[in-house]
Image (cartoon, rainbow, N blue to C red; front, side, top):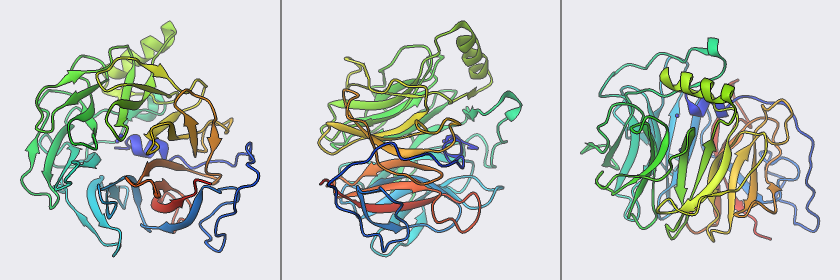
Length: 358
């Protein structure tokens, strides 16, 4: 699965980190493409899809022919939702144009509908920016609710109607369930619901932030990001910020669980901010973004890891931000957001690459 939002936290510009992994006997990518960085051997023929503003959280349609994503271009503007046709490169806004939106997704398997979170019912203007006198925080706008709509943006239907934050929705590939994050219980937990917004079920129940959840291809396992405060100071800080509709997302770990919330397993265990996890098509590995190898915590790269936490592999080496990775349903392509090849400071754009399995 976010105003100076979750998206902007993860778009923090960065410092260079030394290469820690060298994988011998791997074919070099097509380095004629200037978007490649040395040692990014998994990414072939990178193509830039957007060229200005802040563009992030791009997700494929079932056919792999379209992307849905959030974007804005200008500090006074808020994210809205767009659908891009990959063949032509053309994008059209499909959200209302009011309030702030986040976390869009196609409703599989037919993809004739979309879902996203929006504040437009409570405030048609952009909300106020977070208060950074408390340090870096995400603002959990209580006006966020989850909506479904036609791919044209019409026939808008509200799926969540409770007071407080409801966002970060994704859909199972078989269309059976929607995952999302809600504060309805008094804490930020992962929930599931049917496509029409019925049969809501809480899947996590531990103090802290649980969010950004995705199913694997057969909808049997879920991967998500976690911050569970442990010390008294961390717990008090978390509870205070939550009372202010905010959280401090500086330490996040990757976990997996069954679709019913059972068999929870921790995947990463480090002092970094690990986020944006997504299953490989075979379900045996997870790709995610992390500042693991930057001592200052500001340089985010893509990594892959086995579901049991072994075989960590660094994928990108760009001096800046790489995040929000997603594989195409056929596993041939990876889409991600990056600061690389900026036209102006602050730009984050979308990129697509062929995935090298060799």
